Amino acid sequence: MKFPYGDKVLEHFKNPQNVGKIEDPDGKAIVGSPACGDMVAVYLKVDEKEHRITDIKFESYGCASNIATGSIITELAKGKTIEEAKQISWKDASEALGGLPKIKAHCSVLAVEGLREAINNYEEKHGLIKEKKPTTVDEVKRRLKNVMNPLTGLDVVRGNLITDVKVEEGTVSIWVDLPENHIFASNIQEEIKERIETLWDVKKVELHFNPSTA
Ligand code: FES
Image (cartoon, rainbow, N blue to C red; front, side, top):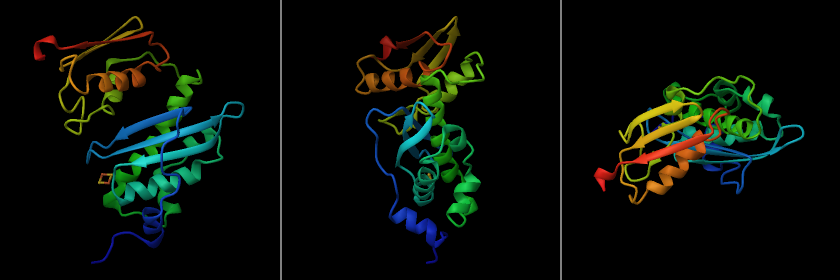
Protein backbone atom coordinates (compact mmCIF):
# COMPACT_ATOMS: atom_id res chain seq x y z
CA MET A 1 0.00 0.00 0.00
CA LYS A 2 1.31 3.43 -0.91
CA PHE A 3 1.08 6.04 1.87
CA PRO A 4 -0.38 9.41 0.85
CA TYR A 5 2.27 11.10 3.04
CA GLY A 6 5.81 12.26 2.23
CA ASP A 7 8.89 11.42 4.31
CA LYS A 8 8.81 14.60 6.35
CA VAL A 9 5.17 14.09 7.34
CA LEU A 10 5.92 10.51 8.37
CA GLU A 11 8.95 11.66 10.34
CA HIS A 12 6.83 14.15 12.35
CA PHE A 13 4.00 11.65 12.72
CA LYS A 14 6.27 8.93 14.07
CA ASN A 15 8.36 11.25 16.18
CA PRO A 16 6.26 14.33 16.93
CA GLN A 17 7.95 17.25 18.65
CA ASN A 18 6.55 19.19 21.64
CA VAL A 19 3.89 16.64 22.52
CA GLY A 20 2.23 16.93 25.92
CA LYS A 21 0.61 19.36 28.26
CA ILE A 22 1.96 22.48 29.96
CA GLU A 23 0.76 22.81 33.55
CA ASP A 24 -0.46 26.31 34.32
CA PRO A 25 -0.23 27.56 30.71
CA ASP A 26 -0.48 31.26 29.80
CA GLY A 27 -2.74 30.39 26.90
CA LYS A 28 -4.53 27.22 25.89
CA ALA A 29 -7.14 25.97 23.48
CA ILE A 30 -8.89 22.73 22.66
CA VAL A 31 -10.46 22.70 19.23
CA GLY A 32 -12.47 20.03 17.48
CA SER A 33 -12.98 19.34 13.80
CA PRO A 34 -16.56 19.50 12.58
CA ALA A 35 -15.53 17.21 9.71
CA CYS A 36 -14.32 14.22 11.72
CA GLY A 37 -14.88 15.01 15.43
CA ASP A 38 -11.16 14.72 16.25
CA MET A 39 -9.52 17.19 18.60
CA VAL A 40 -6.29 19.00 19.26
CA ALA A 41 -5.13 20.90 22.36
CA VAL A 42 -2.41 23.58 22.30
CA TYR A 43 -0.69 25.02 25.40
CA LEU A 44 1.53 28.11 25.51
CA LYS A 45 4.01 29.73 27.83
CA VAL A 46 4.54 33.34 26.83
CA ASP A 47 7.08 35.88 28.01
CA GLU A 48 4.90 38.79 29.13
CA LYS A 49 7.35 41.55 28.29
CA GLU A 50 7.83 40.77 24.62
CA HIS A 51 4.81 38.48 24.23
CA ARG A 52 7.17 35.84 22.89
CA ILE A 53 6.28 32.13 22.94
CA THR A 54 8.87 30.50 25.17
CA ASP A 55 7.27 27.06 25.27
CA ILE A 56 4.51 25.32 23.36
CA LYS A 57 3.07 21.82 23.51
CA PHE A 58 0.21 20.02 21.86
CA GLU A 59 -1.92 16.93 22.35
CA SER A 60 -3.63 15.45 19.33
CA TYR A 61 -6.55 13.07 19.14
CA GLY A 62 -6.46 13.17 15.37
CA CYS A 63 -4.86 11.40 12.43
CA ALA A 64 -1.30 11.37 11.04
CA SER A 65 -1.77 14.63 9.20
CA ASN A 66 -3.05 16.35 12.33
CA ILE A 67 -0.19 15.03 14.47
CA ALA A 68 2.46 16.03 11.90
CA THR A 69 0.99 19.52 11.54
CA GLY A 70 0.75 19.91 15.33
CA SER A 71 4.41 18.97 15.56
CA ILE A 72 5.56 21.34 12.81
CA ILE A 73 3.53 24.36 13.91
CA THR A 74 4.84 24.07 17.48
CA GLU A 75 8.36 24.08 16.02
CA LEU A 76 7.54 27.05 13.82
CA ALA A 77 5.88 29.00 16.65
CA LYS A 78 8.44 28.44 19.41
CA GLY A 79 10.52 31.60 19.93
CA LYS A 80 8.20 33.77 17.85
CA THR A 81 6.19 36.70 19.19
CA ILE A 82 2.45 36.10 19.29
CA GLU A 83 2.00 38.52 16.38
CA GLU A 84 4.49 36.53 14.29
CA ALA A 85 2.97 33.20 15.34
CA LYS A 86 -0.51 34.35 14.32
CA GLN A 87 0.72 34.58 10.74
CA ILE A 88 1.61 30.86 10.59
CA SER A 89 -0.82 29.35 8.12
CA TRP A 90 -1.79 25.92 6.95
CA LYS A 91 0.24 26.65 3.81
CA ASP A 92 3.38 27.35 5.89
CA ALA A 93 2.87 24.10 7.78
CA SER A 94 2.29 22.19 4.58
CA GLU A 95 5.41 23.68 2.96
CA ALA A 96 7.54 22.92 6.03
CA LEU A 97 6.30 19.33 5.83
CA GLY A 98 7.05 19.02 2.12
CA GLY A 99 3.36 18.96 1.16
CA LEU A 100 0.20 17.46 2.65
CA PRO A 101 -2.51 15.50 0.84
CA LYS A 102 -5.42 17.82 -0.07
CA ILE A 103 -7.97 15.39 1.28
CA LYS A 104 -6.37 15.80 4.70
CA ALA A 105 -6.45 19.61 4.67
CA HIS A 106 -9.06 19.86 7.44
CA CYS A 107 -6.83 17.88 9.82
CA SER A 108 -3.95 20.29 9.34
CA VAL A 109 -6.16 23.36 9.46
CA LEU A 110 -7.36 22.10 12.85
CA ALA A 111 -3.83 22.21 14.29
CA VAL A 112 -3.30 25.77 12.99
CA GLU A 113 -6.67 26.77 14.45
CA GLY A 114 -5.56 25.32 17.81
CA LEU A 115 -2.48 27.56 17.76
CA ARG A 116 -4.51 30.66 16.86
CA GLU A 117 -7.14 29.96 19.53
CA ALA A 118 -4.44 29.43 22.18
CA ILE A 119 -2.90 32.80 21.23
CA ASN A 120 -6.35 34.37 21.34
CA ASN A 121 -6.88 32.88 24.80
CA TYR A 122 -3.57 34.44 25.94
CA GLU A 123 -4.57 37.80 24.48
CA GLU A 124 -7.99 37.71 26.11
CA LYS A 125 -6.55 36.82 29.50
CA HIS A 126 -4.03 39.67 29.24
CA GLY A 127 -6.37 42.35 27.91
CA LEU A 128 -4.55 42.44 24.55
CA ILE A 129 -7.55 42.10 22.25
CA LYS A 130 -7.49 45.07 19.87
CA GLU A 131 -10.76 44.57 18.06
CA LYS A 132 -13.29 44.67 20.86
CA LYS A 133 -16.51 43.47 19.28
CA PRO A 134 -19.55 43.01 21.54
CA THR A 135 -20.13 39.35 22.37
CA THR A 136 -22.98 37.80 20.41
CA VAL A 137 -25.00 34.60 20.80
CA ASP A 138 -23.28 33.31 17.64
CA GLU A 139 -19.81 33.86 19.12
CA VAL A 140 -20.86 32.03 22.31
CA LYS A 141 -22.18 29.12 20.22
CA ARG A 142 -19.00 29.06 18.13
CA ARG A 143 -16.98 28.61 21.33
CA LEU A 144 -19.38 26.01 22.70
CA LYS A 145 -18.67 23.90 19.61
CA ASN A 146 -15.29 23.17 21.18
CA VAL A 147 -16.77 21.84 24.43
CA MET A 148 -17.12 18.08 24.25
CA ASN A 149 -19.48 15.79 26.07
CA PRO A 150 -17.03 12.99 26.97
CA LEU A 151 -19.90 10.51 27.08
CA THR A 152 -20.85 10.87 23.41
CA GLY A 153 -17.65 12.33 21.90
CA LEU A 154 -19.82 15.05 20.35
CA ASP A 155 -19.56 18.72 21.13
CA VAL A 156 -22.36 20.16 23.24
CA VAL A 157 -23.89 22.12 20.33
CA ARG A 158 -23.96 19.30 17.80
CA GLY A 159 -24.98 16.87 20.53
CA ASN A 160 -28.06 19.09 21.12
CA LEU A 161 -27.23 19.74 24.77
CA ILE A 162 -27.52 23.52 24.48
CA THR A 163 -31.18 24.49 24.45
CA ASP A 164 -30.77 28.28 24.68
CA VAL A 165 -28.17 31.04 24.92
CA LYS A 166 -28.77 34.65 25.94
CA VAL A 167 -26.34 37.55 26.12
CA GLU A 168 -27.55 40.52 28.16
CA GLU A 169 -25.51 43.35 29.66
CA GLY A 170 -22.37 41.35 30.32
CA THR A 171 -24.19 38.21 31.49
CA VAL A 172 -24.14 35.11 29.32
CA SER A 173 -26.85 32.61 30.24
CA ILE A 174 -26.65 29.10 28.85
CA TRP A 175 -29.27 26.39 29.21
CA VAL A 176 -27.88 22.85 29.20
CA ASP A 177 -30.08 19.82 28.68
CA LEU A 178 -28.42 17.74 31.39
CA PRO A 179 -29.23 17.21 35.06
CA GLU A 180 -26.94 19.08 37.46
CA ASN A 181 -25.78 15.80 38.98
CA HIS A 182 -24.84 14.25 35.62
CA ILE A 183 -21.46 12.52 35.79
CA PHE A 184 -19.87 15.09 33.42
CA ALA A 185 -21.94 18.15 34.40
CA SER A 186 -19.15 19.78 36.41
CA ASN A 187 -16.54 19.10 33.67
CA ILE A 188 -18.80 20.59 31.05
CA GLN A 189 -19.61 23.56 33.28
CA GLU A 190 -15.92 24.25 33.90
CA GLU A 191 -15.06 24.01 30.21
CA ILE A 192 -17.91 26.28 29.19
CA LYS A 193 -16.94 28.89 31.77
CA GLU A 194 -13.28 28.76 30.75
CA ARG A 195 -14.17 29.52 27.15
CA ILE A 196 -16.75 32.23 27.72
CA GLU A 197 -15.44 34.09 30.77
CA THR A 198 -12.36 35.37 28.93
CA LEU A 199 -14.47 37.40 26.48
CA TRP A 200 -13.64 41.04 27.20
CA ASP A 201 -17.20 42.26 27.86
CA VAL A 202 -18.47 39.22 29.79
CA LYS A 203 -18.83 39.76 33.52
CA LYS A 204 -20.81 36.68 34.43
CA VAL A 205 -21.59 33.24 32.96
CA GLU A 206 -24.72 31.54 34.27
CA LEU A 207 -25.43 27.90 33.52
CA HIS A 208 -28.90 26.45 33.89
CA PHE A 209 -29.11 22.70 34.01
CA ASN A 210 -32.33 20.88 33.30
CA PRO A 211 -33.97 19.63 36.53
CA SER A 212 -36.58 17.61 34.63
CA THR A 213 -33.87 15.30 33.18
CA ALA A 214 -32.60 14.39 36.69
FE1 FES B 1 -9.70 13.86 11.96
FE2 FES B 1 -7.58 13.90 10.48
S1 FES B 1 -9.33 12.70 10.15
S2 FES B 1 -7.94 15.01 12.28
